[in-house]
Structure formats: structure tokens, C-alpha cells
Length: 228
Image (cartoon, rainbow, N blue to C red; front, side, top):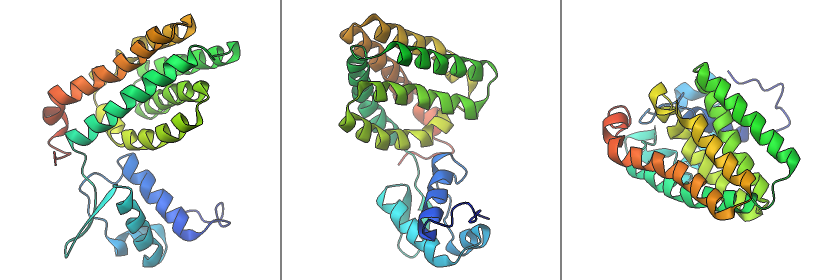
């Protein structure tokens, strides 16, 4: 049941929407799961109306699929979905790293190094929640350092889309044990002040993941997360 005491200044429909969205993004509601209004309302301790409104809003965002006479389902994640997002990330993050290389301050360098270290500790301890948290923080910080507001707005949407399959991707340790070294290469390129070097390092990082998804995606993700 939701804790309304801490959030009672906000409309109920927003609280329900954000909670359902969170559950879909992190995989608590798995792709393909039927979204039963009555059951969700009972679990959350609310009426069906805010749940129905939330499901409609999530459909517009592509996180829920509504099939006539069948009901609503958490949208499946296809290989194409992953590749589409990664193609956009590759361009955005390469651009952000290039811009950041000419703007980063000493204070920002120190903070980026702290995030990289926390990410490494999370990988060493195989703490999936912390790995994802600091992976997101690392990439978001580079976007922020760029100072480009349009880039930040676009990336926010792309990052949300990427979160769903981050939880799938990070399900196997072998797929993330090399990530700290890749993050370090991006950091070193940005710190060097060489915009092109930074662009290539950040772009290559995402390109390697995209190549993996294209070559191994159906085998790795196809079973539990059908290809559409």
C-alpha cells in the first residue's frame, strides 16, 4: 500500500502513476504482465479511477499496451526497442562528452571520480541496485556538465527508456565486469580536454553495448522478454 502521509500534498493520480511507472521501469512489473485495475487498486489501497488514469497515461508513454477486449499489459521490450534507444544514446553521450571536455571544472572532476569509484565498489560487491544507480549517475553527470539544456531534456527521456533494459542487461555479472574500465576511459578522455577523443570514448562505450544487443540480444533477452 502506498504511503500517502508523506505525499498528501500531491494529486492521488500522480502518486499512483509514478509508482506504477517506477515498478515497470525497474522490472517489478515485468514485461508482458497484465495490468489488472482491481488488483492494482487493492494492493495500492486506492480506487480504480486513479489506476485507470495512470494506465492510460503510461500507454501514451509506451510503457503499457492496451489490447481491445484483452486488457492492459506492461509493454514488452523488443531487441529493436533496445537498439533504437542505444543509437540515440550513442549520439547524445558522444556529443555531451565532447562539450563537457571543454567545460568541466576541477570540482566536477572530483565529483565524477567519486561516482566512478562508487560504481567500481558496487561492481566489486555485485550490488545490482547500486551498480545501476551509479551507472546512471555517471552518464547523467556528463550530460549535466555539458550545460546544454536541450541535451539534458532529451537525455532525461532516453534514460528512462534505457532503465527498463538496464535491469535485464545487468542480470549477468559477465556483462558488466568490464564497465569500470570503460567509464575510466571516458573520464580520462574528458579530462584531457580533447573533444574528439571524448566523443569517441563515450560513443564507443554505448556502441559496444549496442553491438552486443544486436548480436546476442535474442538469445539473452528473447525468452523472458519477447521480441516484437
